[in-house]
Image (cartoon, rainbow, N blue to C red; front, side, top):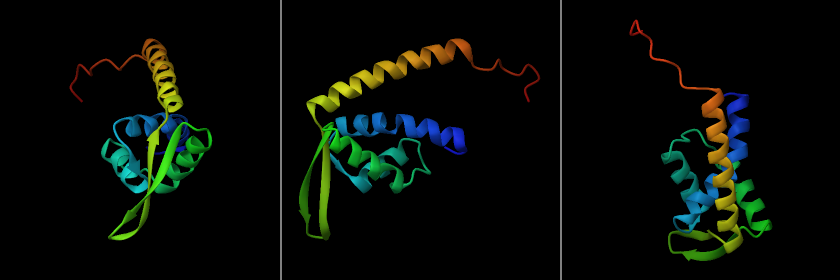
Length: 116
């Protein structure tokens, strides 16, 4: 995403996206960034994700565990808590409602009859 408005939009939904990705299975930070990039956030910086992980953990929406690695330093794996799953359900519902409102007020552009 690019531009100030897009980065603000991403900032608002990134906690939900992190929870959704972790709902699929626990992950460590860099792998989570890669998952989000592969999902379409190609220019997502690691510096955007780690503060979200810290906040979600502080709010007890995710938990972490340290796993030793034979190939380097230990990794911190994250997983959602029951409260995190409930927050994801709440955020998902709010997001879908907002998408409906946006779809009503900002319909998709009509196809160009000239084909350009």
